[in-house]
Length: 339
Image (tube, rainbow, N blue to C red):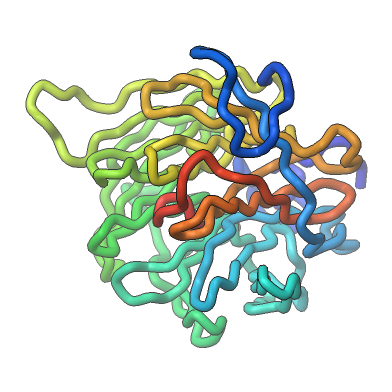
């Protein structure tokens, strides 16, 4: 299989399923302040550990959905893991060890996040359109939701939970005859009622709440933009609007995380980097893997340590699937821990 660039289309083509649709100036030390107003920082990410190599069966590896569970252990999904290989990997970041947490015969899991309602680990299965959950130790898999939403099966990419445990999903339906079909879908915490909150989107990907849980940030892979969708309406407020237009070049907007200061961390598919914006759309920093790191093509997501600033970024390519670390601009909260 030709592996010149890690493309989501090739991910599930290799699995025999639907297609996954799934800058700064001078380099400063991590955490250093910009020299002047309006300048941006370049934050160097450092290699922490390799978790996977390219799978012979799929010709790829693609890490996603890092989320901290109990005892500071980090859970990561491998989207392209074949049957018999771990779909979810658990990392002890203190000891720098990893083990398989969950293995299944099928499924292409693109995100992971713990529910504040029942404490279980929820995974989005892009291949089947289902949402499944696991006990924190990886046992007891359950199908939480599976079926059509307004006449179409989802292609769920990322997940965000509200404070009551209801799920908000980036439904990454692709394009049909030039028409954008992506959606933002809400599923109540019992898995019984699904509601489309936004549609007509160009392959919805990242999704995360703002700090006040009043609105959702979400990215569209095929438009390279971040939009804001109010879920708690305020007087005089309109519906969703484009918040940030991302200059990605050949790279595309992937997952989104939000830190304790409300900053957005926008991952890039097609470049091992993340762009950081404040809530007003100002570009604050670029997180980059060092130029000498060969064979790494995408930085898909990040988890910032809850209550701390150490961030773990999932980076993948022909060289394998890695965790890279950097110092975030602010502490980690629920919205910077998975999805």
